[in-house]
Image 1 (spheres, rainbow over the protein chains, first blue to last red):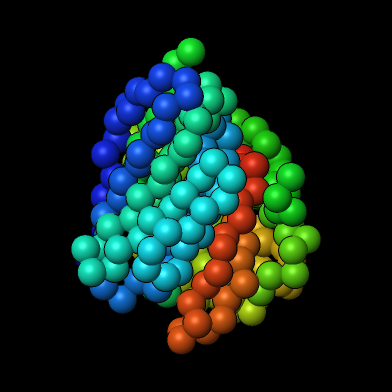
Image 2 (image 1 turned 135 degrees about the horizontal axis):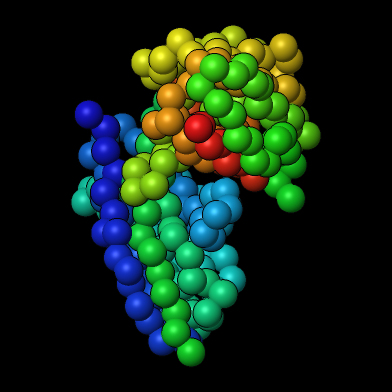
Length: 108
Length: 117
């Protein structure tokens, strides 16, 4: 069964620090990977996609992909209290497989 | 706004009622999806429509009935639901490039919070 694993957290970081969120996936055929942010009571919002090994940066967010290790991560630099949310990792073959999400808490 | 709208945003229904959820996407995508999100569980894919054709039905009970009249609209018809069906129901859309190309980014609507009493 294809799975995406995430630590449920909560991951607590102080304001201004780097938050590191991790995800592993089981299907070696996965072609692309996505990070979604979900605030409590709201729907998932796409924040990053990554298709190739290495790093992809977008503002304060950096996604990292290592297909050999089947590992995806999301780094959030200069974390803000407004970044407090659940972060969902998803992998794609013929459909998206979502992890259960990691809850991030950024405290002032 | 992501370009995907859902109505209603909240719905309370009895176990004998019939209701429908509506989704509309303004992104020009060719694939639409229904997901169920319950507390402490991963997003559960319910139905997939590619080019208006249903291509996935993840063993969803028949009390849930999807309808996709065109590539911009998606409905989920509900009847004789159970209390355990209470959840957030999310619609999403994406561009689908076939088995070789896979799917690109999925964009979600705001969801319908369903409570079955």
